[in-house]
Amino acid sequence: GENVEQHPSTLSVQEGDSAVIKCTYSDSASNYFPWYKQELGKRPQLIIDIRSNVGEKKDQRIAVTLNKTAKHFSLHITETQPEDSAVYFCAASIGGSQGNLIFGKGTKLSVKP
Amino acid sequence: GAGVSQTPSNKVTEKGKYVELRCDPISGHTALYWYRQSLGQGPEFLIYFQGTGAADDSGLPNDRFFAVRPEGSVSTLKIQRTERGDSAVYLCASSSQRGGQFFGPGTRLTVL
Image (tube, rainbow over all chains, first blue to last red; front, side, top):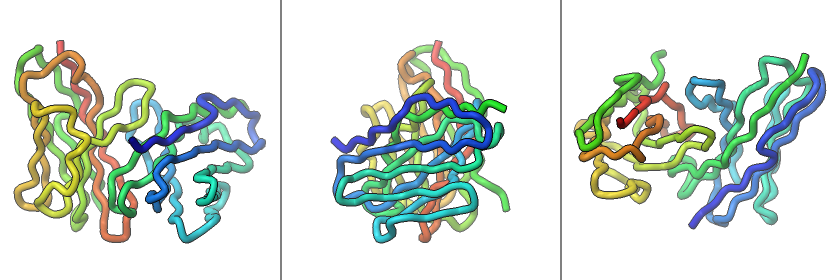
């Protein structure tokens, strides 16, 4: 079945450094790729998304890149801050941006002050 | 505006009992999704509604699980004959035509 692989599972960086999280997906029909941030005990929060007709999207300190040929997409966080510490999930849609999402297993990001 | 809400926030039940979990989507959102999340894992898709009808229920693990959305707004996830393995956080999300799924706070279900 469809699968999303996410790496690394944990990531520790110093405040101010950049963090990169990578995902691969298996279904070539996937065309929508959101990223969620989840703090302990809280709901997943949509932080950025990208559609398959775009290669890169940026929102302040966060950017996402997509390589459709390789079925890779990545989240880049620059100038990390302690409040960026959380679990980040990538996901790929089945059947368009309103289709169901297949999630990766998550990356626990720790930003040390 | 108000986000997705879910009730109850916590539910403790005994093995074999029936439970209902409720989701109120963002007003005007046509699509509604149910996921469940176990500790240390990403959300796992269960079922997706477009309006009143289930557009995709392929994620429901077995026939003990059922969901309805009779008026195209509020949805109820129903679990019969609960088992300990059903314990998880059940998340609801909704989206508009523009896409982007917004999650509720979840219901933590514990089956003793």
